[in-house]
Structure formats: structure tokens, C-alpha cells
Image 1: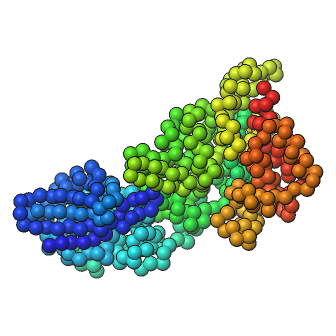
Image 2: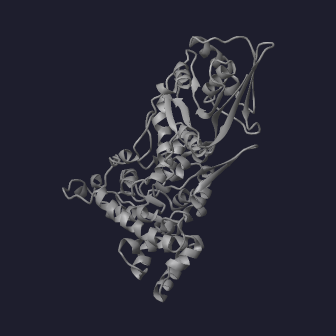
Image 3: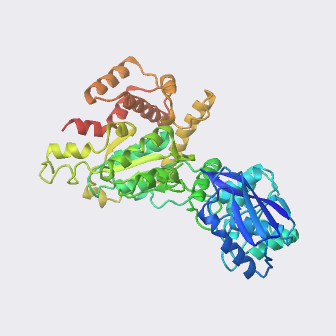
Length: 518
């Protein structure tokens, strides 16, 4: 008897429809899985047969063949346990053999219980696109999968199960099913609570303003200051002034975390912007993604959020250089012998560093803490091409004691966020009205859009040219200055870029000034 049903294989953050064909014939007892299965699927034989027996079902000796089609795509992971087990029971005539309208996923324990899987959201989205009638998967993944049904407006039923027996009961008696549903509006009803509010930050007026500009235009930013000046605190406060995640952004972010097996158990959707803070010992693969199973790295986990690298010069130089492509293209391509996977990587890059290898640039007497040669060598650990891709460099000086003990408070994150949202709205209207709907922030502008929306008068052009000659800036740095100028003008409600906007943007190239002063 031949049984057929649907499962899913992950390709990047999307799911591929996999037909699980199970055939049971008389002959020498055997259990063979074909269709490019990995070791986890090959080992599923023992898990499946033991789970079926411990669930009180009969397993007569048969020649069993399981085909995972398409056969030329490699299948990975333990999520094929439950569909193979259900397909086997269908082939043995203990279940209806025709199950082609259902997508089934789940890992089996030896006692027949079903464990959580990765990639439930993209799998359910694929099932909705294929107009399948039902998704059966682990109970802990049910709310995540139900988001796909709500997003697509599909009538597909999402059924969470905790055991093989429960899955069998739903298949044999559909009226026993209790489909899971979620209300998207409820998920966004409560605004996310970020750990650091700008109200908690003492002093640092210039750095606060620079972060507001960065958030408004989606610009990358480098914080330069001595230890204890508040660089990390400022970086952690940044997600709180960024616009709230839209549904499409939340959906894409959730898919990444689902594929990476990092979505909290039972959580339906990520509604908070990610903040990733990898250690400086992070490897190239951990940062950019890849490995044996081509999983998303930190740059993709920071998609629609913030990637923060503290102590930037302490990172391996080769590790920093792999950031250049995702910073420019806003996606990362991971290539293997038989597989090329693309992951989204549109994030705000925030980095922090000391101005000197000794920490502070000057001691209490105003003398340099290290020789000019040592400082220059330390700063040169960051390559020019990477530095060019960072729009804003801002000095973060040590906070004065009078500011620490002052009762005066700055603006809170909500107030700043309102201004950022207004500036983002201006940018959205600008780019959508010019038929560039794929561009959302000033930082994403192409050279063509820069020429169109960042026009300068003669005096401003002259000032910018002088700065480029004096600081030895590249053409890429020139474009970054214009983009930042456009954002400053948007925050101030100005239609055109003025001289003061250009001057302020040039001042945000402080590392260029410091490097060439040594």
C-alpha cells in the first residue's frame, strides 16, 4: 500500500514542499529512506519504530520504502520523524492512505511524544500557499504556525499535537481537532519593553543626537570614547527609539529566528527589534552564517534590528572584513558545494571602541596614554573600506561628575522615537512617490537617488570638497556624508540640504580626523 503526505525542508528562511511517499510490501523486513536524507533522517528508523510500538500500535514485518521528493534536494533534521511515522501507518492501512491535503512535521521521542522543531513558520506559510487543508505539528510550535494562517487569510487548520497517538486521533477523527488561531492585532497591542531608556542616560548630548540621526536614517554609527563613558548603554538604548516593527518586518524576523531555532517556546511572533551583541572572539561563520547546515549568523539574526560590536578593534580583522558585503547589499550569501543560501541582513550596524589601546586617549595630565605610532596601529585595525561603510563616527567623552549627580533629565525614548517616526515617514513618502518603493531610509539610497535628493548649493559643495581633501575621504564617504545631511534636514523639517546640515554631517567623521592627526 502506498501512502502520500506533505512535509517541508528548509532552504534559507523559506520552506520547500517535500512529498513523503511511503510504501509497504511483503518481503524481507526492511526500512529504507531515499531522497538525499541526512544522518538525522537515516537514524529516524529506530525512533519511529520504537515510538509506534510504545504508542500501542501494531507494526507488522514489511519491506518499507520511504521516498522524500524531490529526490535531488538534500533533506535535513528530525522534523521528518512524524510525517514518516504517519505515512508508515497509512501504508500499513492503520490510517487513511490518502493524506495529501495535510502538512505534517515533528520530532518523535521513543515514548511517542512529539518534540519541537525549527522552521515551523516558513513551513506553515508554504502550506498556506499550496492551499493545503491542515498542518499538524508539535504543540509548542502551533502558535508560530498559526501566524502564517492569519497572515495569508487562509482557512488552513493548524493543529498542535503532543504525541503520535494524538496526531493519529486527529487524522482518523477530524472532529477531535482543536485548531489553534492567533489574533495579529493582539500581538502588537502591547509595545515592546526595551531594557534601556534614553531617560536613564546622563549627559552625552552629542552622542544622543547622533543616535537619533542614525535611527531616523538607518545609518551605521561608531561610538568612540574611553572605558566607562556609556558607549554600551547608548547602543542598548538605540532599539527603543527605532520605529516599531511592522507586521511584514516582524514576520521576516520571526522566520529567521524560527529557522535558527532561537524563537522562544510558545512565542507566535517577534514584535521587538533584535539587538545582537556578539563577543569579539566570534568566528567568521558565527558572524556571517554558514557551517555544516548553513544556518543564519549574527548579521541575519540582527535583521530589522541592531548589530552591536563592542571593542571593535579587538575583533579579528578577517572577521570584520566579512561584514562589508552584508553592509552594502543588506543580505548575505552562503555557498556550499551543492547549496547556495541567501539570508536577509538589513540591520543597523553599531560599533564601539576606545580611542587608544590604553583606553582613554589622554591621562589626567593631558598626555597621550600611548605613543602616536601605537595609536595609529590600533586605529588601523579597522580597514578603510569598512570605515567608509560607517556613516557616523561620534566621540563619547567621559561623563563629568556634575552630570552624573545632576537631577536634570533628558528626553525619554518615546519622545525621541516620535521624531524618528516622523522623519522616516518623510523618507517613505519621498521614495514611494518616486517609484522606489523598495527603498525605505536615506541610508539605502543609491548614487542615482543621492544625486536626485541630495543636491547642494555652491557654498555647500565647496565646503564638502574642502573636507574631502583635508580628510582624504573616499567617494563612498562622500555619499555617506550626503545621506546623513539628508537625514538631518528631514529631522529638522527642511526640504533642502543647507550648509549647517553638511557641516554637522562632516563633523560625524571624527575617526577620519583622529586617524590623520597621528
